[in-house]
Image (tube, rainbow, N blue to C red; front, side):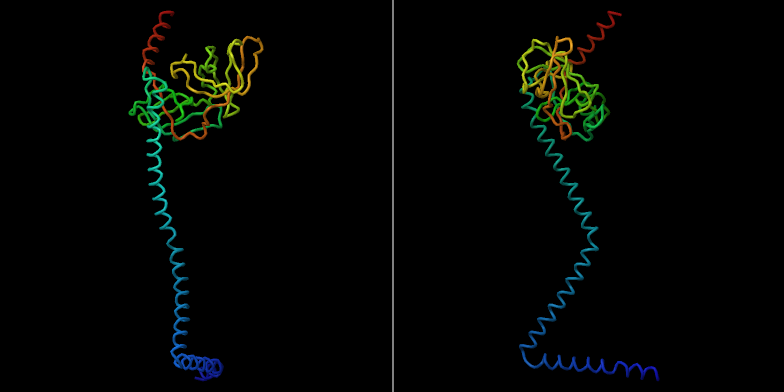
Length: 280
């Protein structure tokens, strides 16, 4: 009891002050309609501020759920974008086919799902396989029709293509409008450039000339764009040119490709096999 009395005596003055303040506010609030409206406005502002803080706290703790919803929406949009890209690539089919000619080549499209550019032997993984008609030996072109590589392996649903940025890749090329041809290869040091060797010294060549496929290939028809001449010089024996070529395609930015199949490839390989057998 003594402690309770001591406690009340210590808080008596502050308590009395609070009581007087409450009485003063009540009296002031009831003094006129204006003061009542003003106090009501202030109280509503205070309550609104508190509700705003509480709503912010609730939103903060619900961010994880909202983030999951956003990720789901992003995934849906990515699927729609992939379908749009495939439709765009399909629309290039007929235009490119008209340029190349209806025979003996057949075209299809694929999406690039993996692509390396920083190794000496680079590959592309495509989302089409045997069940989609993709087979080993098909040429790979960019959506603009430039040379990219060739298919070297297939599973049921996927294919692996040897990139033009692979030191094992070889192709036959020529200066557009000229008949002399040389061998296209990559040195492994610059992802934007390849080289051509064994181009006859009689070839007409200038910087900026377009380099295209020669047609002397099982994988690519003639006049497929490869790149543009940046520099050239005579070889050590002065019988041919060594040419540096800036690629027509940026391999690192490929998302979709066009696959080109030589319908006569099987027949050609059978004949080559028979010829080798006969020599032996």
